[in-house]
Length: 225
Image (cartoon, rainbow, N blue to C red):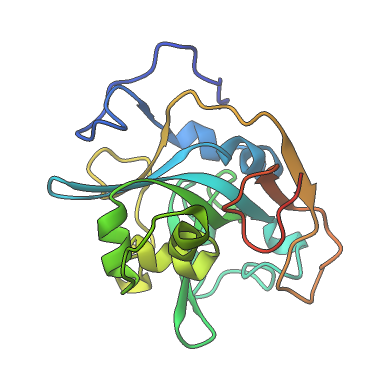
């Protein structure tokens, strides 16, 4: 099964003025090698729907985790009750809890039975900012980039801004039109993608598996140009 990047004519999905007429990414997008999917996810829109309320933000930074061959991956030691989502169908949300108070959102890749996933590290807010502020328990003041970064720059922040939890979202099919957590294609293409080593890990830390939109002010850590 292969994934062909869409032409200018896209599927017509759901409600919001920002995502109306844009395409929900299909399972075929995620069934590929995780190193191929990761850079292709940059620029796509993560969307949370709750009735008529919509939160959306552009994916600007991700990290790839390679499964059984990657000592930094949760799947490295094989299937467990905790990581079983990673060995299931592609396009599923894998959510875990870290440091005792942060959730992190990953999306499973590769064919079913072969583990691999992509950690969503940073987003650029697009729509539903007031909902994100409320979810993060922050007051909106001037709305400049330095303030907006507090919403979705970093995996823990973005998960909170989108009300993502393991109980609510782990195993959720982000390719389903019935899902309240989805990823959309709107034709945006990054001008330049930067690749660096992954950050915040100690095992396999030298692997160049972090992908980000170069120059984007919402990436976590220091901006890469």
